[in-house]
Amino acid sequence: MPAPTPADPSATDCVLTLPGNWATDYSWRDSGAILHRDRFRDCAGGGVFSTEPTSLGTVLHETGHSPFGLADEYCCDGGYFEDGLNMFDTLAECQADAMTLSRAASDCRKITDPRPTPAQDWFLSEPTPNDLMNADRRPPQAADIRQMDSFFTKCRAGSC
Image (tube, one colour):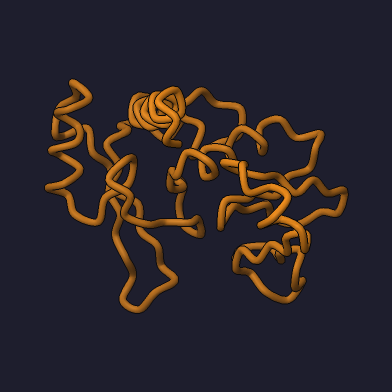
């Protein structure tokens, strides 16, 4: 079960309260971070993420979400969504993506989110669960790197 979020300790969804001047004074930002000292499960959403400033692994993982837009790659209570980047809702899409990364279609792996009814299967073209979007302080793998490179390419062109 996910841990509480800062806005409501009894809630387990990602709810982050932004400063009142966020939209006006920080309209130039691609992403923002809410640094905290309290213990709760960090998360990302709406162009911002939360983290303890002393947890480099969490900072790195949460930046995978914002600004890069990557889904979690761990089971069974993460933030899953079809992004066409590192997470797919069909095996066929995953297998096609694996080929673009010079991998075999059989490299796709499945994780199941048991929270919805019925449970939702998700597919990743990363063959092993040892990267940035799965565990803290692990390096990103090919699908994650592709998205990060794409983001920075857009930024260099002035459109990130």
